[in-house]
Image (cartoon, rainbow, N blue to C red; front, side):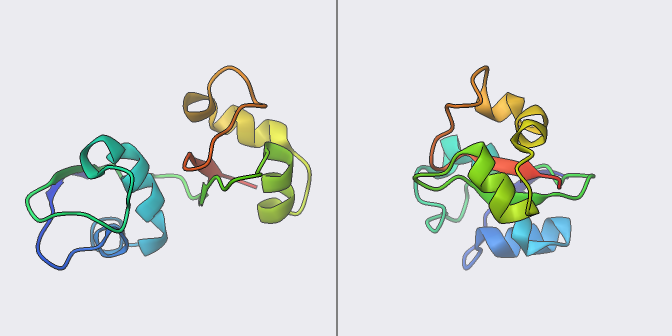
Length: 111
């Protein structure tokens, strides 16, 4: 989509809904702009300029929680243990070791 300037009263959910047509995409906007927003996705400020890149392929956005691993995420979201697909789809976020994921990472899950 491009750049979006935060307005008074905006939320990431609202921005995702308005700009992408799906409020549940807010974790991607947060992850892409964490350097601007900081560590609290509930605290965005008017005037901040966010890069809003709405995905063209449907996925379930999932924010890694403490204690998660790729297998548990696959079981929770997809109902199977195909962690390799999640890893392959999110290598750019996870990095070279599928056993090292961190709370706060946002993954695109395509079951």
